[in-house]
Image (cartoon, rainbow, N blue to C red; front, side, top):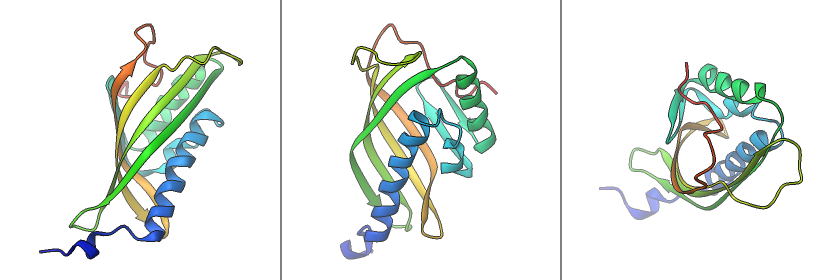
Length: 154
């Protein structure tokens, strides 16, 4: 049996995971997703209600297809991040995503398009956290919004 202290999240892991979650939002919002695949393990996967892409190359193609549609303005706000260390030593996280987004150049009305539960599994490359998997499940979504990121279209 594993003791409670053995399952605590180390300060180093907590910091690395929070940095990863913030970097994810930044790369999507400011960098149009170009560097987002590098935040996943080579065989990592990303899933939404509308599809799943597995591997950095497939995730990269999804962001390239999105970028090819023209300018996109988005702000991904991740909050209430809870981090857990499992008995096998792996780390996982649960958070909430509040997403504002629209095609084109700002400013736009502040109308959120999505609130989703986010389930992550993390891996570590030295002291750097990476996403082994990320699953989004919609809780609230604007009915007029079409899927933005074309995951699973390979």
